Amino acid sequence: MTAPDADGLLAEQLLQLTRRVHRIQKRHLLQCGLDITPAQSRLLRTLAHYDAPPRMADLAERLEVVPRAVTTLVDGLEGSGRVRRVPDPTNRRVIRIEVTDEGRKALQELHHARRSAAEEILAPLSDGQREVLGRLLDTLIDGAPGAEQRC
Image (cartoon, rainbow, N blue to C red; front, side, top):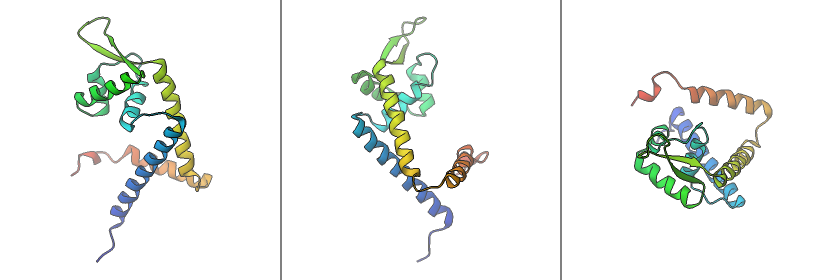
């Protein structure tokens, strides 16, 4: 039996780290008493980047999901009082989604949980190692041109 190739090993390590980040974030969120799914968290964070309340279709496009998935997420967040549906002032057939005060509070708690999780994960690294990791992650995030189109 041959050892896995280096790229395959790195890919597996990245997936393991991602899962660890999610587990630690979830633990921090539970400690804060914030009952929110990762998908709801992502939607809420996405909403925070809009200057004006977006349409559901805008959110689906930004999140790269089908509109039905956004409806389900909004339903859950609306049920917890974190977002609300509001009519578009120029077209009453269009519904927009806005963050409530409770949603802004949840965003602050999410930010704290994410920061705490990052601190926990990065604790074993020196400042120099963190700097190198940051540069490497920037390179991976930026990606190679056309890399997403490969099979």
